[in-house]
Length: 163
Image 1: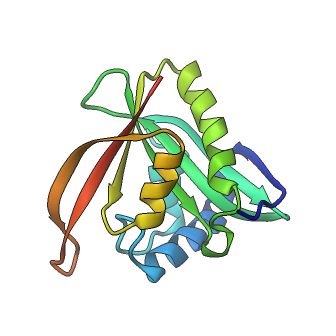
Image 2: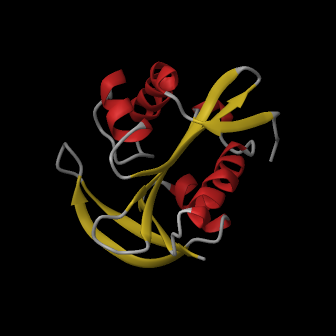
């Protein structure tokens, strides 16, 4: 793995446009996110930067450029659980960005009293499955044959990280 100089900080409203650009490129590439339609700046702000269930949203800045972001929010169905979503720029994958984001997110989760973090990943997202597995997330469930927008069925692998 090649590592790059990356710093992590909380996301702010002014990051939304860069976050949208990053996520929309990931969506366009396909196969690695449950998102299937591009987001706009307002949706980014309301869904990731400042939603009601926010625990933390961090951005990674590498060489002056936003290279990834990670969201952690409360799980409304399970007390003590949180849900996580991670997005890294396509040209920054496997460079340590995700690990640095998770270090900050893990700290925020512990501070918030989270007991378990859920990561639900498309079964065809090999990189995402490997990433979360490498962080210590363990498989605990499968959502079978969840259809994509075009009707293609794809399993979702549910992984958990327990404190």
